[in-house]
Length: 560
Image (cartoon, rainbow, N blue to C red; front, side, top):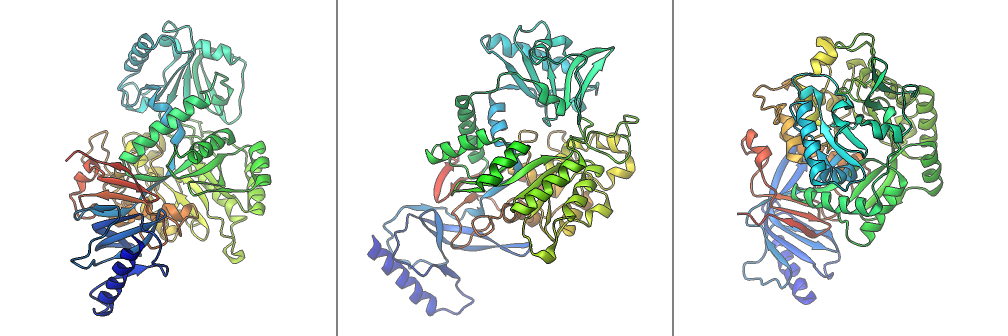
């Protein structure tokens, strides 16, 4: 086997020497005697040149899970005795990386009550009722995905319709995860009553009675039994299977406690969980104490070197922190989930210990506050490469937008713009909406770096939906024909770069993943269509042909 490969590369080099420099391209490592694990033949290999993309018609040699060589020619009579996959002209893209998602939560949601896409609270109640009838032995009934903004009556629901459905707790999470509706049993078990108070959140009441709705920090008052490790393991493996189907080869998990990170590490070491994960630690004083003392965790599949913070809530739940009151709720400004003093203290501590700080910031006040705090510590003159991130960066005043770049990265989810487009103006008013969801402007301000994510399960985990939303600014779910603020659209190349090269940069992995280059992990999302040239409206309908992670084919579409 090794001798055949030596002959192969010798012939190839001879062929290369005999050609002009413009007629053939070749990349290879110095050591050509290593065993080739796999060869991908006849692919159109995507390559980036700044913000442009071009293809090499060629072949990829994989050794130990990494790209060993990119070859444009193979001698016509050469017989390769190796594992071979003939791609027959398929398009090989760098493996898609979701720069902001909730991997474990999505897995748990797959087995919970699905309320996404519902058109009324009455429909939600019927779905919950049917689920309980079909699953009578559940100790806790969990659901997710409802969104009152999609209903004809756009008001928060109350728990009165849930009271007769079960004698067990019922907990229904809003689509953004920033509000929960709990039945009275769940409230009583958690000792939440009319006198309960919370900072950075809201316990909704009606006529001095609890409605069951808990917003932002108020959700932390619930003390219902959590899923077991066995249930979490099943959830992680289930969502992994779905992720492979969509061509995902990396996920930035936007916030988990240590116990879940340890579980993930164990599953990866057992080779059950193959998805590479860049995990942000859900911040708390105790979590910071633990991780700063123990230091970052780095394996071939797991990277832990950042903390996830929340500066405010969500726009859909009116929890996003605004400078002026909401246009559709007088004298309401949203919630400061963590105080300014706390954020400053945490930022200083992370800066001094070299950790990345990633902060959820939706409203213009939350973004302004966090950018001001970041600028106290991120100084390019000190050459501190910490790459602190603002997660979402949804409503950023143009003056604050200038603070991005030089070490501060906006991390956005384009599908939020197209999901929110039908009601966001009601929340923000005409002036603020003009500078909301401004992805092209944010990219320019940040020096051309704009990692893209889905925020699944808030949105679909299909990365093609994210790419489509970024370039078309149209809503798939709402069937919109008009684009939302099309001047803030990205090009196809910029969108693809956002889910590959930029996502890798935002996680300090630009030398490992995000491009197809010699020495990088052999992570690929393969299609039979050219994403750059196919009709725009066909992009969401494209199907992944193959998904490769670390040189292993983890998914193949057998449907022809």
